[in-house]
Amino acid sequence: MFSAAVLAGGQSRRFGEDKARFVYQGRPLMAWVLESFAEAAERFIVANRPYPEFGLPVHADVKPGGDAMSGVHTALYHARWEWVAVAACDLPFLSRGYWGWLLEQAHADPSVRLVVGASASGFPEPLAALYHRSLLEDVGRRLDTGRLRLQSLFEEHPARVLPWEGLEARFGPRLFLNANQTGDLPMP
Image 1: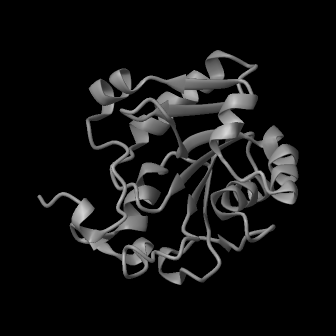
Image 2: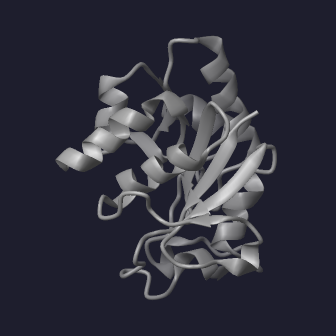
């Protein structure tokens, strides 16, 4: 059992419209991510604006002003389960299988507090990751002190970073493709 949170708190400035509501291949981008969370025991949205069309609870940032770190903090704060899957709303190629694989990795080592895939460039993808609820206090402190770089969590806590090669072979080359502009999304 796990909780799942979609972060939709960005301004979508480069995109030009609300990314979460942008229709890609017949469905809003947010719906694609929510579908990847179909196995979650609870699903909710972290955003500072309403999204009634998705029929899920929407939680505003508990500690605003910290960009994605605020979103992760809010997800950990509201989650009921030990593991929290966190994804940005603009990652339409995440899948149920991806989250299942991350959960398997989390349960394989009880000391791990973060499970994340690495991109092709080798860096962890913090907005497509599993966070343990025990990180809530530390994430809150980081917000209070202005330490907003999500990558630092993976450097300072026991983390399992899954190499890109294995992820690409299992889930395809588009796994972490995110939409910063409408042209970033491949056409069918």
